[in-house]
Image (cartoon, rainbow, N blue to C red):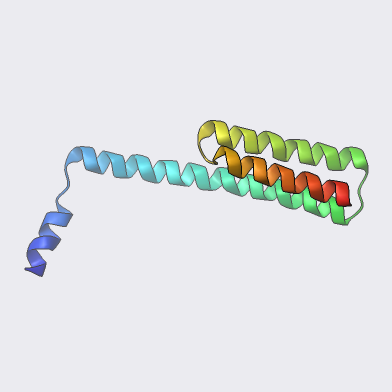
Length: 96
């Protein structure tokens, strides 16, 4: 019985295989984009802790904003997550 289900699961239609390939490509692309966003956020936070110039901090914040908006446009992030993240970063800026 278990062998039958293994055989059925192993045989996929070509369209299902294509969808698997597409999903994997999309996953890797999204993962790379999220990594770049997190790197930008870490750069902003390090600029805050190092008491960098205000213009440099705002430039880093603007780059994070831009990346988050692009992520929403591409479907990597949902709109509320981007808004929440941007709001939290802005509040950290005003506290510092």
